[in-house]
Image 1 (cartoon, rainbow, N blue to C red):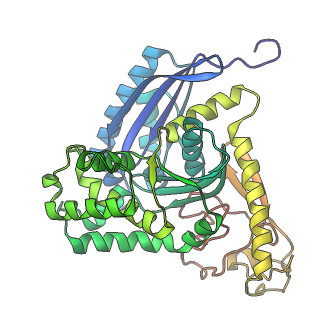
Image 2: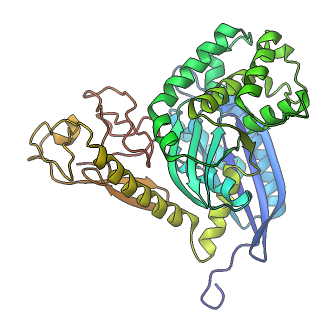
Image 3: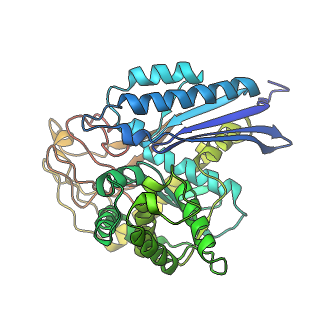
Length: 433
């Protein structure tokens, strides 16, 4: 603390324990800017180690721990003053992970925070926004990870529409390219799986619109490099170029025979699945061109860390923008007067809404009042009212089923998983009402 102000640490570091790769970036804070000192990346493929039981197998655990030991050595060498370590989709879904997290913390020297899909999307957007040219126009950001795909629309540094889809290149590879063989039929089946994930959200994204689209993942970067290597005169990521690349991948017949110099032996096993995801996002969202972004989630983590020591935390700014997006969604949806069912106990329309509460909500209640749904992002609590500000899904699931309903275009898709009341897609706890 100096003169009543918190001093920003000299060296900051962010570690992203992704489902496919682990990343670490170290930066120095100098004259109000972050200067990157070091970047480390290792292909760990943690999601591939999740068996049918949901537990991490020994091989994936050992790969992860060896990588974290190397990261820990580097962090000690640079004497990072402030470090944030986050786990994403694979760790969100892993069962009995406490033992792994304890060993991982010992190897790295820092605690690991498992974040929700929404927080992951927010950090990705922050990383892209802070490393891209400033623009007042809306931008779309796509991040294809090993276990999930995040799509975000935002303005400036503020996300407006966020979604974390439960489809990633590692999981899709295991389902459709597990033996390495590639065919037109397999690629089409993989694309169909992605299409089903995109279908419930694509209309909201098309309605909001954007000027520029960015891809922030290693998958998008490698696809972009491959397209430039094939044709330097047409280097952009477009639907036509992606379809041409898909034909080339199918012609190879096997991931070991991919004739793409930019695709190394580590990337090859998940490359067809990553291509299938990007193809569907570009086609279904009607994207003309995807630019490769410089930043990603680890840069978002760094700017979050920096924001904690400066005038305004980036997380607070993001949540304020999300609240504004919820309000605009309410106005837009009230105008369309969607048809929703009445509450199972007592009809209670609020602001034009008639709500059917799920069984775990209405049970034991004397009719529906106007409860608040609490979305918990680490260190933040953002409140939105279901009845008015937070339009509810058109199709609540049955008592214990999981049908991936979409609660709000602004807050992304959550899935009530009764009776545990935990969101099965993003790990967000449901309220206790």
